[in-house]
Length: 123
Image 1 (spheres, rainbow, N blue to C red):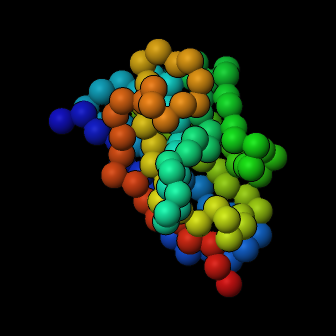
Image 2: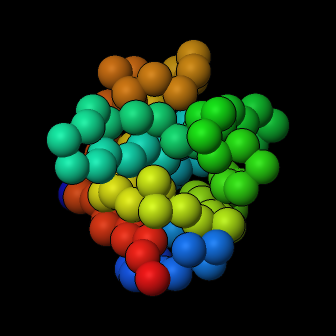
């Protein structure tokens, strides 16, 4: 059964760091663009960072530019999201998803989703 599984979330203090991982099983993630999305309570799901299949193109939400970095290791079938200088506004459930034909970090374009993982930024 092809699936994406997120890990690495948890509770962190403001200005702290976390690294999320999105591991694929049952298929080769190297053929897909991958995006990280998040949804806070009462808010719509939004794109955070996306990377194309080659890793040469990345896109970030303005709110995370300079703080978050998306990367991929196709040999490990995994995409990462390094999150630094975390703020309380970053608190949300984070999801990874894949897209066979990358055309931007748009929630509606991504077809297969992980189950999500909680990130809470609080002192």
